[in-house]
Length: 79
Image 1: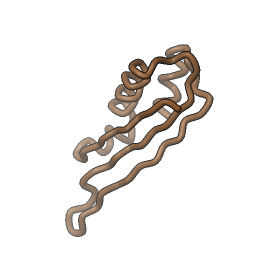
Image 2: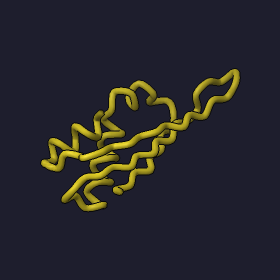
Image 3: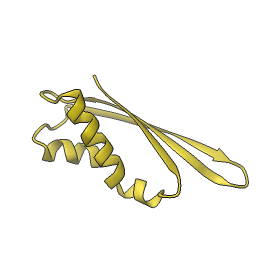
């Protein structure tokens, strides 16, 4: 949701955003990592600007902030 909002605020609303998260869990420790895969269709947006907005959304996302003690990685691509 944070990425969709950032894209819209940028004047480049997405036609489609697909996101999945893979979480690493270690028994006795808990969640130790999260990897986000994002694929989006955003007309008129350069791949560089998309990466910038995706990284900003990851950092500013309330869920990412709640998991601040967990490494979160991001793989974001334009379709």
